[in-house]
Amino acid sequence: MAEIELKTAPADFRFPTTNQTRHCFTRYIEFHRCLAAKGEESGECEKFAKYYRSLCPGEWAKFVRTGFQIGQIKSFQD
Image 1: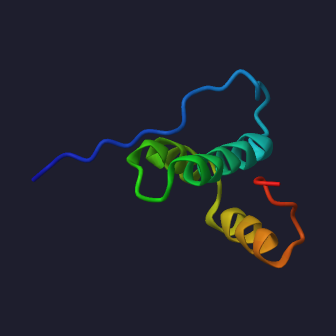
Image 2: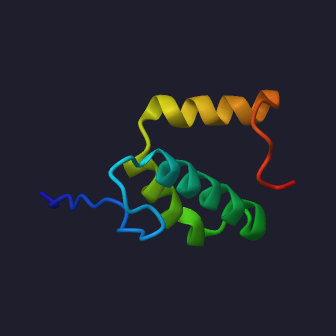
C-alpha cells in the first residue's frame, strides 16, 4: 500500500503571527490569479490549491467563493 505524505503550506514571512486568516485568503487569491493567468488546464497552479486547502477551513473557502459569486467581495481580477 502506498504511503501518504501530508504537507502544509510553507512558512510565509509576510504572515509572522499565528493568526493565519490573511495567509489563508492570500493563498486562495494566488490560486485563482494563477488559474486566470495560466488557465484551468495548467498544473502549475496546483501548489497554490494545496496551500490554501491546508490553511483554510472548508467553511472559509466556501464563504469566500460565495462572496465572489454574489459580488460581496471584489474580484481579484479587477
